[in-house]
Length: 180
Image (tube, rainbow, N blue to C red):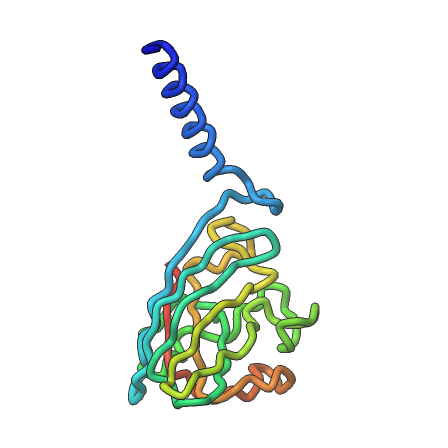
């Protein structure tokens, strides 16, 4: 009877080892599952804040989290910018949209767009937006030109119209976060 218990325990441990090794297996894109965080801080004169979690998955980077302090029932441009620098009071230090392939700005659902173009975020009646977006065409910790670790995420004052050049006429930058 003791042997049966030991055998079951060994199978359980080897099963755990197999499960643990799955955590570092490559995704369909050939990259190991990785993640990053971004803590949104308000730009001068704004009260926006939030925490975003980024996870590499097949086909892009899944971004989830909550943004608070927005105008109630409003829509805001939401982009990855080229520089991981939020030091300027208006976050202009983050540069333009992340665009390693030098495309025109566009709808995040189209092929011709900046890699940093993402869907607008919409706040509820309390001024809070729930973020659940897959940013396609970008990676985390790949070391490739499309890697967004070390770049910035910007929340804009107005909605992105997805057509005006170079940045969708989304207005001023109201929050900035460095992807770490």
